[in-house]
Length: 154
Image 1 (spheres, rainbow, N blue to C red):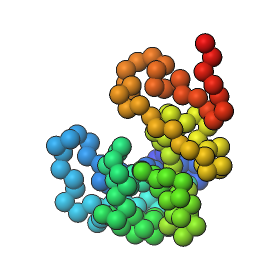
Image 2 (image 1 turned 180 degrees about the vertical axis):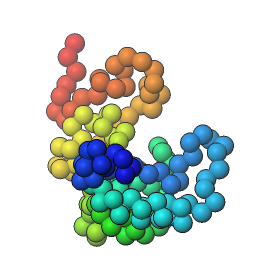
Image 3 (image 1 turned 90 degrees about the horizontal axis):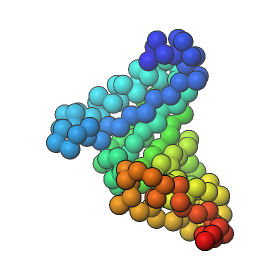
């Protein structure tokens, strides 16, 4: 990370960590993820990076912020913190308002909601994605979702 920050400027570099995500289904987690990732966050913070972005739980799983002290990671890093994983509109608003996070990242919600930012802003219904179409190839389940107010043309 030091080399990357030296080339691009630390204020233009961020890091994404997934302390609770298993790389492969049977891969065990670190024996002390809080200690390991806390140390890592502290060292990254010393570089003055733009942000630390954490997946709070298993990728595509529920939010697990109560199973791991992500607030401590934010404090150890000392800079901007982006939370991700299982957030809905109210959780996001609460996390930012409380100072828990500086920003919230939304991933898969964008697949079924090409206008996600507008939906969140307006507190409009969020469309559910059809997970059965993921990785199937083609537009179905990726680019065929409609924005609010759009209708299907025949």
